[in-house]
Every structure is written in structure tokens, then in C-alpha cells.
Image (cartoon, rainbow, N blue to C red; front, side):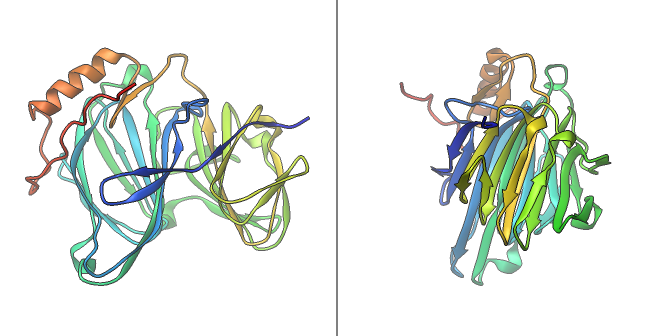
Length: 293
């Protein structure tokens, strides 16, 4: 009997001057554990005159996790944080009651050809922490737990699993795991997982229950404790999930909340430009119109 509940194909979405592959939310599956939103950026091959420029925009009710495979992004936020994120490191920004940030190509790369490739993830906050004070943490790649086992390379990017704990300060039981293979290997890690679980194939392929799955697919597990599959050679997968919240999460634009009133209040604050400012930035992304049904 298959342990796969749902297969989600990566879908194109527009984030300004970039196309990304949207993985969550999906109509049939809005969240996986506390994970509410995942975008696969790129790989985008940018000319010397092309740059990432996401002007200041707000968030509430979540933590953002930026993880790059290639390229570089300069992060600036309303707390005064200003740091370049490079491949393998983690930017973990907790919005709480409200934060504003921009994401741009660093100045030293703006006149050269470049590549940008990575994941941007939203992790919803527990209801009691949705209005917490905002914060920002940067974790270098050397400080993330990583190890070799049974011919596979593991990295625990966030959360707790395998008796290990990431330095990323999460606010609910979750995990975000990278597994890489160089040769075909069987993987059986169900005993180390909990809550809801999903697997994203970045490159290569996996086999499960006699079926082969290729890149740009997310497989949602029926039962995380039964997580077992075979990785093909030169394959990279990301497994994410954790304990689901008892309350539904609502999303409008960059706002996530268990109460729609919090989103409406955030919309009004942004329209009135009452969110804190990003030092040195004068641009901002306007509030989008409500969706049409």
C-alpha cells in the first residue's frame, strides 16, 4: 500500500521580474506541518544588466527561511539587519507582529553575469506567538549539522531530527532536511520523522512503491513514520514537515495568520505605511488588489 497521499507538481509563479516554481500552498494541501509556503527560485541566469531587486515589503505571523544553492542575495530589514546570504547558509527572519525587508543582488555583482538558485520558505508561527516581536538570525553553513551515513550526505537545515538539532531557532516542532546521493541508495528514515511530512526532489530521481519520481515534484506522505524510498544516483531531496497546528492558517500576499482580522489590520497598516522602515530604502511594494474569484 502506497505511503504517498498526494503528488504536487511545481507551478510557475511571478515574483516581479522573476519566475519561480511555487510548491506550497496547493489547493488540495495548504500546509505541511507548520510549512505554509515554498518557492523554488531559478536557476536564473542573469546578465550583467539583470539583477534581483525586491523592494521593501512586509510580513506578519511567520518566519521566512532563505536557503541558496547558487548565487547571493543581500538582505536588509527594518530591524537594521544587513547581511549577504550565500549558498548553504540560512537566513531566518521572524516577522511576528510585523517586519519589512528587501532582497537585492549585492552591489559587487550588479554589473557581472550571475546565477540565482534556491528555496524561499514560510513557516507559520504558533497562534500564541503570531504577535511576537520580530527578530533575525543568520546561520553559516558550517554551523548546520551535517553528516555521512550509508552512502548518503545529510544536512539538518532547521528543526530537530535524527537526534540532532539545527542552530536555526524555530518556534514549533519541525524539520527541514537535505539528503544527497552519489549512487543509488535505499533510504528509511520514518523512525526519525514526526507529524506531517513531504519530500521535494531538486535533482535526480527517487523510486517509491514501484514508481519513479523526477525533479520539481513534491510527494506528501500519508504517514511520516513510514518514510522509505530509493534515491537514484546524483540525487538531492529535501524533506520537510513537523507538527501541524490545530487552527487553520490564512494567507493574503505576505501575511499569514490564524485570524483574518490580523491580516486585515496588517493590510491597513501597510497602506498607511505604518510598518517600520528599512534603513536606507525609499521604495516599497504596494499592497496588491484582493484576488478575483
